[in-house]
Image 1 (cartoon, one colour):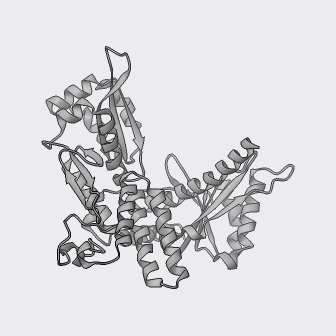
Image 2 (cartoon, one colour):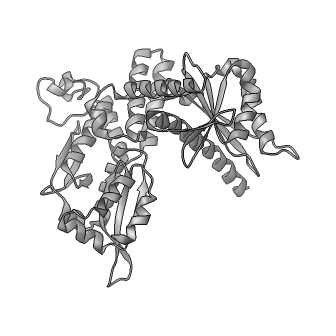
Image 3 (cartoon, one colour):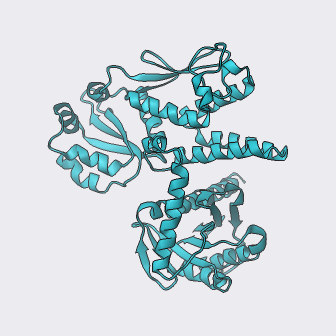
Length: 417
């Protein structure tokens, strides 16, 4: 256990899947002996240093030579990834330490109206080491993509009245809609969240074109729930216990941020529109930047913008940043006026944006990592924590992801020409 103490103290407090490895005496290679998941890797792995562990767990830790982890975006992804890895490697201690008599699989039948079931013997997805995990996963998915778990009868089932079996096979409604739900369920269980999101965005757009705004709104709510369960670093159980958790948490995050700013004499009547600029790729070839937008704390993907820097001789990073700020200013009316601008960077970056936007009474703050903290125009810094950190960090991470997408696209194009 001593060999892991320093290593575990440095771990991030993020969701992930971890693996204990042991060097094989026969092959000379490392083999997984236990795979687990946690919403907080640091807390979970440090718990293995407890002297009061069970005998089998102590033996497992004492046998391990090293520990690795894979960072994930959500508790749901960690549940699915854990099952995939356990199925692939079949670590011996996942068998010896599990509480359930048998692992559980998820089965999608081959019927006209496929059912989503669980099985102890075989399945399309799994095995899941913990029965409760399977139930949690299916309950989460069912909130977005209703499905049936029973054979076709003469009357609508109970779940159809709850909106969790829609269209219920027993109602004789559109078969294509039901099969589309099943396809999306398979994609979620395969951790192909981006494909599912694109499918929903396309569906919402088509409804809007047809001016079927009620259906478009329903799909938009599905996208919101999908984003939440696949991106939020929060226990899936909490989400299931509170149907309004998304709205409640967004409200809590925004109120916390407004309260924080009030302490520093920045008073907001609203944080309806927050914009975040990532300027990580300003230097060198294919310099890019991004702007992402959060409306009432939710990602507004249709408002995102990419910037390809117009390189000039002698132009430095700050000149490039000033260019981005001015290009944003030129579209102040057409793109909408932000209540707050967050810049991924330090005081220098904050001052450049502030010089451009101050006269329009638009506040600018920076965000820095390690630790996560806000940087104000006067140089003051405040460490973020709790819901406020989750909101700002989520917007910052999204801006970074969006900026990298264009940068990598341009870089690939350069390498291929």
